[in-house]
Length: 249
Length: 332
Image 1 (cartoon, rainbow over the protein chains, first blue to last red):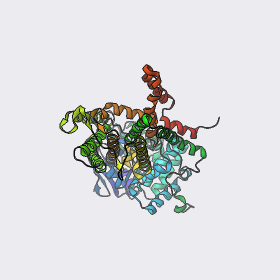
Image 2 (cartoon, each protein chain N blue to C red):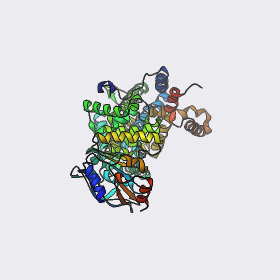
Image 3 (spheres, rainbow over the protein chains, first blue to last red):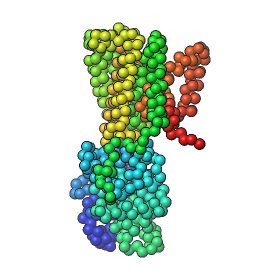
Image 4 (cartoon, one colour):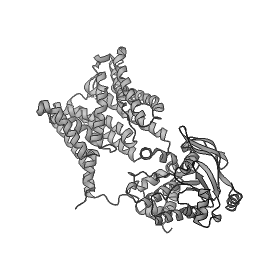
């Protein structure tokens, strides 16, 4: 990590709540992510940038334990179990997967309820979570009985984030939430992430649209070909040319 | 936010604004069609009652298969093994050990679920074609055991003299009594499947059917729910196997052969996979259809095959989907 990036992390009040050391991942014999150190501080929004095939999604999948990994991930001081995404999710590490992963034939309400699957029968807590989701995404409230698969891409992304919030995350990992969305809808989604982050929720945002992500992020990791290429302080990036320098360095 | 949480949270799981009469009709139509077929068999009795009776036994078997394949989106070619365990369990315990039908059926059920647990725990870690092949092997092995373990199963000779089910001293041996009892069993099975489908368990099944990774990311234990789904399917398979031997009074390995698997798959897809009524309507249609072509003699199989192909072309979501289209079709 560069000195400026460290200072950026410090300025965000970043006591690391998620810390990966030497985290690597492979699919069968293929090494998809070389060992990487990765940190997210309390209240931080960290962007993970890079072109297609850089290993961004793999990094999130590795944190959650959805792929075979090496190294260690600590969350709130304890080591997360490997290859056990259920145990990781139950500690509050919640992923909004690439392509949204909504359950198309189910209604919006059923999707949201599935997000609170681990809650059990605590009706009061369930109500609180529903209220939070409806506050952020009033449109979902209007479409509770609609099949999730019949909604627009933007609404599906809102549902995917809403469903993740129903799990009451302590850190939210998002894999390319802007994928396939119109710029205006993307801005709306990213603004929601800003609101969530300002409420104190740490966010890891994997994104190909680097300029949009850097507007939100306290810090950004740039990956290339499965390796860490740079750690970027968004305050140091003032133009597309400067950003391009990071990509082509 | 202006609204309070109590006004926000809906009380029911699904929230259709108002159920239209058209939707009521679409939901009731397949059940009414099934009731008409069963009612006809009850009135006429004899051979039609026997055919419809077998169809209802299959409806229970296919309903179990539907939990695993329709609700959970997994594939099993081996459910006949669990029907065999239930069937042979009932037959052996009632004929050789003088048990009454109810404890024998329960023992068969317990053995089938236990076997499903032992088999499913390692097997369900496989995916796609590998899972299909493994489950196919389970069915073939069960068939082979039924043939080879002659000291217990009597091999190809089979076990005869299985007593009919009796309730409070009343023996259900007539066509109509048997058909009535089977109708009650099918309704209870359909009710159970509908409850499972709408429950938290059913939502977990639907979640892992939609995307295993997305379900895992939400904290749903995919391996555990796959196994649960497999156990439920095995339970219904065992129940249908036991009913079969008590209704027919006889069991042999051919009953639980690969033919049973193929027939049940046909019923599931013709009826409508993933729906509650699909297995019932599918079992009735696939069982009754060949009989309606009996007059065609040599061309009976040809006509039956052509009818199935046409059904799958014009109703790719099954007959239940065709009925559902009554509700969604819009006026031009």
